[in-house]
Structures are given as structure tokens and as C-alpha cells.
Image (cartoon, rainbow, N blue to C red; front, top):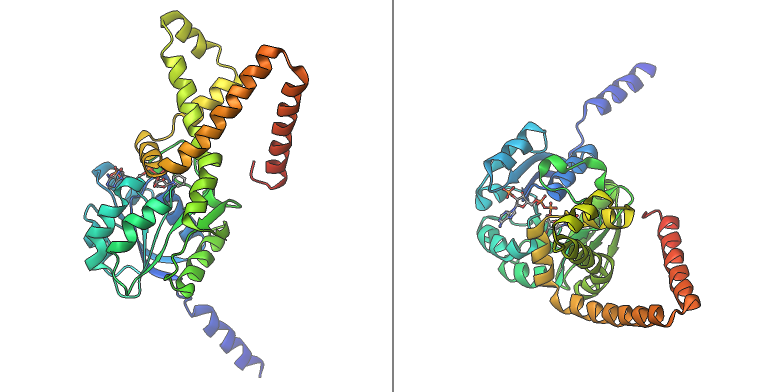
Length: 309
Ligand code: NAP
């Protein structure tokens, strides 16, 4: 009896558990694509990773760092036989990529993306995809100001949110599988309508980046000596803005071009609030200043309590 037990145990030990996705193709293997590949490997979710990038250096780095098993510069070749295709390039490229890969996708494959804008990506990608593949648009709310595969790390999504914006026709099973994948990669998952996502991100991410780029731009327009002093004496305020403003220019160009309406609406509200602050300072209204700053502090406390600091 005891012998039989041991035999069953060792049999179970040698039985390989199939990963969630046998073959995953990343179109774009920068900060987000590489971090996803590493997080998927950490969780044992993937067999073979194929990475597609334009630059030979990017492809070589993906191989050297063990992020990808195979690399190619050909979008169509990359997706052949893939169970999951992740589009992780600047959002302005997503429509052309969907068009190029459409005819080569495996029937039943899942296509997802990581774009920081959702409605424009849905509009650009969905019309190209065949009916026998499942499109589950997504956006991990995690990142750094660094770019390229060398910037990727497996822990990037731990305890961060990923928002999925499935289409009405997206199969619930495919959406659940992508959600499960993100949870196993360490993230929390929420579903949203794409246009609602774009409005939320306009305030939490796009406007702060616009302000950072503008403040740093104002400083860089200063004349010689003054500009040098800004750099030399940059206290935490300005320094923090420069970190945000170091983010990839192409990626951010595409975000503003593809989330125009939501950004303009939030910018209008912000401009009104800024004008109100101007008036408060001109009037020397101390209590109003203190009230605004106290509300700011409370928001920061809320972010810390939600463990998103
Ligand atoms: P990244 O580090 O700059 O990597 C971009 C990747 O896309 C590279 O592999 C690059 O290949 C490729 N690529 C760039 N332009 C391309 C083009 N015109 N055609 C084909 N491939 C192109 O960027 P990332 O930070 O990973 O961002 C990728 C996506 O994630 C973006 O859509 C962004 O909105 C989204 N996102 C970013 C963050 C963040 O904080 N960075 C957070 C959440 C979501 P080469 O190296 O060969 O050029």
C-alpha cells in the first residue's frame, strides 16, 4: 500500500503542467512588453516567447536578457502559431500592426494590447481582426520613465492595476483568461468602458505628464545663466517633474494625439482651477490656499492607504 502511494506521488511529480499560453508573441518589446514577458515567465504562464522589434539592438537585448526565445522584425512571422499576441508599441502604430498580422493569426488566438489610450486603439485595431480571434484590450497602470527591453522587470505590475476594456462581442472566456493572466502576474484587474478609461487616465496620467513637459519646457526656454541655476538648484519639486518629463516622447505624442477630447476637457477644468488659484494668491487669501493644499494632502494619504504610492 505504502509502495503504491510513493509510485503515484513520483508520477505526479514528473507530470509537466502545461503553461497558460504555449506560445506568446510580443509586437514591441520595450519596458512594458519585456516586463510582461518576465512576469509571465516568473508565474510559469508561457512556453515560448517571440519578440518582434524594428531595431536589431532591441532584438539582441531581448535574447541576451532571456526575455525572448525567438526574435524577428517581421510582424506577420511573429504571430504565426501564437496563442496570445500582445501589441506593446506606441498606440499610433496599433492599427497598421493589426492590419499586418490579421491574416496570420491562429484561429482561437487572443490578441491584447497595453496602450495607454483605449477607445482609439479599439477603433484602430478591432476592424482588422478576423472573427475567429478574441480581442481583449488592456492597459497596465504601471510604468517608469525608462524605455527599451533593458528597462523591463518582472515585478513592475505587482499590486498595480490593469484595466481591461473588452468589446461587447469579446468572449467572456477570453476576457477571464486575460484577467487571470494579469492576476498571476501580480496585478489587480478591473473592467471598464474604453471611453471611461480614457477620461480617468486623462486626469490621473495624461494631464500630469502634460504639466511636467510644460514646466520643464518653460525652464529650458530660460536664458543661459538662469537655466544653469535651475538645473543646479533643482529642489524636489522641479526634479520630480523632470523625471516624469523624461518619458518616451514618441509614446507620449501618440497618447495626446489619440486621447484628444478627454485631455482637452480635463485641461479646460484645470485651466479654470489655475485661474482661480491666481486670483486667490493675488487677493492674499491664506485660508483658501490652505484649504486647497489640505485637500491635496488628503488625496495623497488616500493613495498611500490604497498602496498605490
Ligand atoms: P518602449 O520601451 O519605448 O518600447 C516600445 C517598443 O515598441 C519597442 O520594442 C520598439 O521597437 C517598438 N516600436 C516603437 N515604435 C514602433 C513602430 N513605429 N513600429 C513598430 N514598433 C515600434 O515603450 P513602452 O514603455 O514599453 O510602451 C509601449 C506601450 O505601452 C505604449 O503603447 C504605451 O502607451 C504603453 N504603456 C506604457 C507605460 C509606461 O509607463 N511606459 C505604461 C503603461 C502602458 P524598437 O526598439 O525596435 O524601436
